[in-house]
Length: 213
Image 1 (cartoon, rainbow, N blue to C red):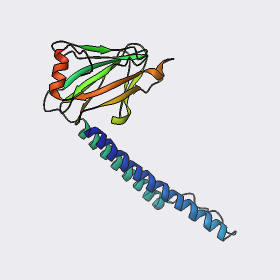
Image 2 (spheres, one colour):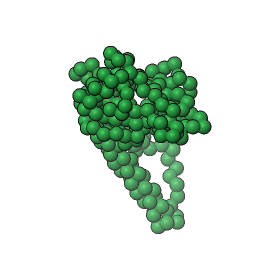
Image 3 (cartoon, rainbow, N blue to C red):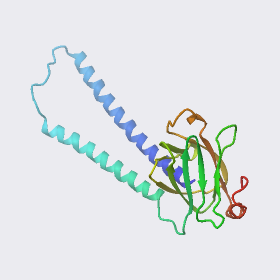
C-alpha cells in the first residue's frame, strides 16, 4: 500500500533526526561532566548571556523544525493527492461496540454491520487500484478506526465527519480495531478490511454486499 511506504519514509527520517539530537545532547553532557571531574577548581561562568552561542542554538533548532514541518507536509500531500477518478465512497459509523460500512454511491446502496461478538465482525470491502474515500463519524462516543498493518488511524466523532482517501495496491485481508477507549466492550470492537479486484468488488456490490467478496 502506497501510504504505508510514505509513513515508513517519514518515520525513518524523523527517527534519524531524533537519534542525532540525542547523541549530540549526550555528547555535550558527557563533555561537561568530564571537565567538571578533571578540575575541581572550575567555577561557573559569571556571564548572564552568550548572544552568539544562543543565536547559533536557536538557528539550528529553527532550521530542524522548518525542515521537519516542510518534509512532513510534503509527504502528507503525496499521501492525499487528488484522485484521477471519483473515489469509491464508504460511510463508516462507529457505535458501541461495532462498525457499520455503507456504500451510498452504489446503485444497490449496500450496508455492512455486525455485533463484533463471537467472531461476527463486519468487513470493509474495497477494490484494488481505485481510490477509496472513508467518511468517519460516530453514533454515540468517540471511536477511532485503526488498521495497524496499513498504519492508518483516524478518530470518529459524534456529529462530525472526518475523511481520508487511500488506494490499495494489492489484494488481501487485514484486521482493524478501535484505538479509542469507548466503554466496556472496546476490546472487542474489531473489523476486517478486505481488498479485492475491481471485478470481484463490482460483483459483490451487485449482490447487495452479501458475503465476504
